[in-house]
Length: 185
Image (cartoon, rainbow, N blue to C red; front, side, top):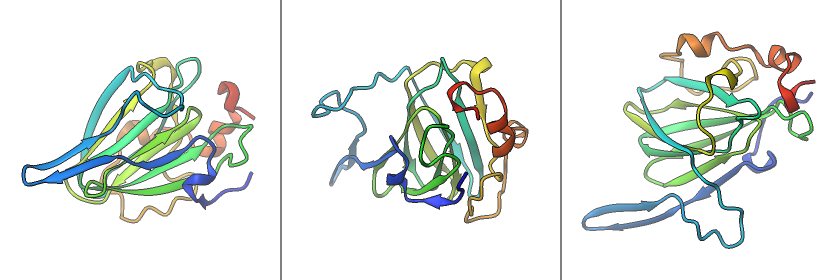
């Protein structure tokens, strides 16, 4: 297994794309999704939710296991965040590697995370607001992930807060040795 940070475009199925934005005297309008995809498969978003975080907070690294795995789209509505994706798919050429993408609410974009990849972020500003769209309903029995400090990510700030749940996730090596459907070794 090769580890390390790679460009987001190297992880198969991971997309970071600008979104439509219009600014005028009233403020800003941002379009995150349209069914008019120009030939791409159209996703159905089964859940939409958001989180707010203070500067330095780390949330992650989360995914759902099959058969409740999902595609996740993430957008920074306010503030800035370092978005991180780790590829956990055994058949992927980027297995165990991670990509980082800085999201800034002043430059609207969307990160689309494929099934089999763990996702998390660190808030770079106070009151960072992150919006999530996911293609399956949360299934607690299939909720999983890896510990935020187990795959070599250089988080830019000291961690100001990490949940007990995120601290208790297995490290990358332990996750890969466990039975996790198409992502086990």
